[in-house]
Amino acid sequence: MLGRQAGSEIDQSSCVWRMNNAPTKGFERDVGRRTTLRVVSHTSVPLLLQRQQHFFGQANDTVYVIWGPLRNMRKDGKGIVYNMLRQAMDSYPQARIYVTTEERMNYCDRVFKEETGKDRIQSGSYLSTGWFTLILAMDMCKEIRVYGMINDTYCRTDGYRKVPYHYYEAGSRDECAEYLLHESAPYGGHRFITEKSVFAKWAKTHAITFLHPAWLGS
Image 1 (cartoon, one colour):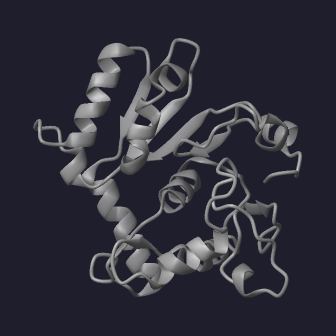
Image 2 (cartoon, rainbow, N blue to C red; image 1 turned 90 degrees about the vertical axis):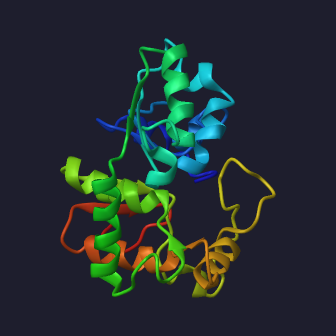
């Protein structure tokens, strides 16, 4: 996304979604200013809580959708992440924070198995925030434009651009190096490349356009 100057185009969308703690401040020219909805991993909640006023303060009308496993999101007092969010709501009662249900989590697991033939748990992997975000977007949006996502073959292309894994973390691990590390991890990794191949399939039957870089469906 860096240097693409897509910010004004993104801001013209009727609904702008972002993932985890991806910032806009300082990157407005490339990624825009508006955030309508933010899908956040349970592992990224502490990063939001470090800047509670910024994310949940009075001037913020963003809707937050938090996903995570039941062990972290349970409501019986033992869900560590759920408890964190309850405390945030006590401080910012106007914040619009929603958590995914266990049924929704199981549904996303079933979709992964149906599309890949692999059981997520048995394969020792975790679904990415991108997976939950795109499934939710297909349920809610008539048309989807995805910015800054590579396809499943990009990292095998001669002369591919080496960029940081996150646009806001200069000097961090190269994006493709991160993807390949996760794809081959025996346990605890995201199957980013496998997920992208599924996204390419979905783009053939849904109005999904991929930009920067542009690929199948665009």
